[in-house]
Length: 129
Image (cartoon, rainbow, N blue to C red; front, side, top):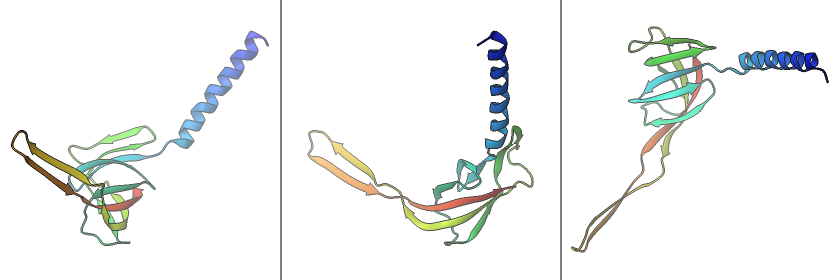
């Protein structure tokens, strides 16, 4: 193998990787949903704090903080005007893992164990516009 042959194959390989990055790049957005910020992509499923929407309803989120579309980043101050993230509610009554709260006062014989399960809503992101 000669030196020129190695350089040309390396050049072709970098061009191939660059074109693959363009095809594999996903548009994403950072959205404020129910007081928390989430990084979402079209098609992703996420769990958010309980929403008022019922199962199979469509919801729109207008509090979009950032949109990255193939390297073109738009940043809002604080939100982007006209930007909307559309989603569908998959399940409106999901419970998170149990959180155990244990309290103890040493040398007094006081022990208390409480459990809590937060209610969540599972949504699927349909589109970012």
